[in-house]
Length: 490
Image 1 (cartoon, one colour):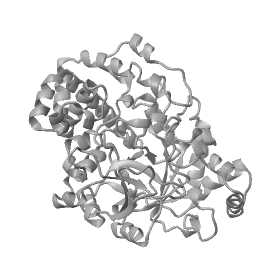
Image 2 (cartoon, helix red, strand yellow):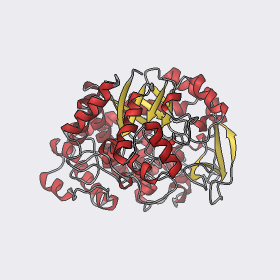
Image 3 (cartoon, one colour):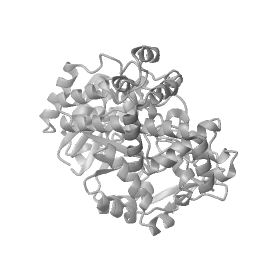
């Protein structure tokens, strides 16, 4: 990876008239902004269809795309929606996503577009489905889930379907054929629009960094259709679930609740499921951030009945057995190791052996001069962040920091006061030896805690912040470009 810089902004945070970011005009305008600002990378969060809490990390499929990101204007250009129908979907512009308002009527609108498919368009959908084997099971899962009142798959009344028995699946595939075709079509729209967007980004010198969560949701098409990949009991429920022990994010730890992998079985078949998973991600992005990298060395296994993640134990992960397969199969992909959290010598050794760059977060740096997140300790083969999607904005971090932390930050950066520290922290990241520097867009905009993307361990109020019109000015692009060029990152 050449010395460069980029900006972290979730797709859902893009501005627009329909209440949530999409893959249309506003995404292209953001790419234009990145180009003007001298940025070569756009980092996003997972883009799958979300489950509980609207979190991109609780997707109901690791392969599918989020229907809410399908751009309605592009469907209108294809003759599938009318101007009047788009007008009815418009929402007042605001800095927080109202998921209830966005979801209300969105599927109805997409179904209208589906009903208007021409024969040629329908054939394109069928050809797409043949090229993506995962789509067959995902579309049936979505159709069945809708038919059974949005129940989790392990609560569906048809036991044979719950167990993913072939005869039951085929019976329901016929019964729900129209819904299966609809969900297949929505994925065709998503991936077609994404391919155009990625081509636009790459043509403008911008590459995409995606995020690959280490785990998948229990209530997902992946677990339902490929139960052999996971540690589940005879009813499809896990006996132990994923999480992390108490750390600086949460005194109770984080109880994620995801099923754990049957690593022994996956290794036996050559990690075929992971190969397919990364192949899908490689269609979307030029680089992949491997979420919770430390879980590949050892992962925190929590009894399924536990109320917090305090109770658990470390178990060995697949390590280089998996990483060697992925790096050999996909040499064109740049991988980033999210090596944050409680780390051991073994985790550091795994990252070094794999050759993946790790992450350095400036907001973690100011506990004292020996802190490894301080820029003067960096090895060039790393990625420096002001903060990630799980952190506060720089302004919010500084204003809520303890007295000692703030005093050391001011001493290290040579400035004091919120605005001076914000600018100095961006300069510290840009000037560092890290091969790539990434900042949240909120940090260039100087926004406070109200613009935070996520607070780990807090169930409500996350994944809602978005841009409003007027944020992405030529003056801001020029300011970022000057800073980026000063440190040879353009």
